Image: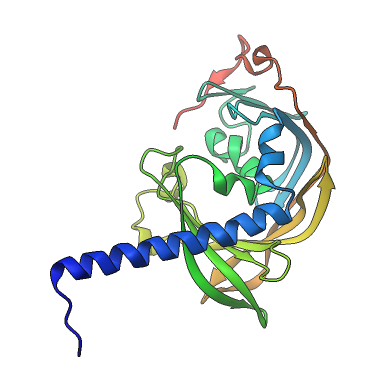
Length: 259
C-alpha cells in the first residue's frame, strides 16, 4: 500500500480537484455551446416569456420579464403581480396571492429552470464533474452544481445536470431545495430530492431553451412515480436591450415579500 506524505497528499488532492473542476467546465462548456453559447446568452439584455406551471398546488399562468444582467424581474397575471428590483421583491394584491408559495421563491424559480444550462455559468456557481451517470438506460455526463456561501437566497441548494455526451444537450436536472420557508429547519439529509426532466426544447433568438418539462420525485438516481407537475414556456423573446428599470419599481399598493 502506498502512503503519501502530507505535502504530497495535499498536492494530489489539489490536482484531483483541478482535474474534476476542469472536466466539469469542459462538460458544461459543451452544453452551453449545444444550447447556443454563453456569449450569445450574455449578449441579450432581457428575456420575456409566458409560463404555465401545473402542480398539486394548482395552476400558475403568467407572463415574465427579466433583465438578464441585473436579474430584476416582473411577473404578471390576472391573479397576482410580482416584481424584483435591486434584490427586493414585492407582490400584489397580498402576500398570500400565490396560494402558499413564498413570493421570493417563486420570483426566480421558473426563470432559473428556463435559463438552464446558462444560469450554471453565473457568478458564485461551483461546478464538479461526477463522471458518467445512467438514466433510463442511457449514459450521460453528470455535473454537480453548488454555490458559494451568500449566493442568492438559498446558497445550500445543489443540482446535478445530466448532459447528453454526444449532443451536449441537457436532459434533466436533479436538485434539492433548501429555501428556508420551504425547508422548515429540516436537516439536509432529510430534504427530498426532485428532478425536472426536459421533454421539449425550442429555439428562440439563436438559443435553445426549455419548452416543456415534468417534475418528479428523485430516488436512487432515477425518477419515481407519476409526474408531480408540468412547467411550460411559450412566446419566448430575447432582446439585446435591457428593460427600463421603472418597469420593476414597487407600486404603492404592493407589499414587500420577506425572505
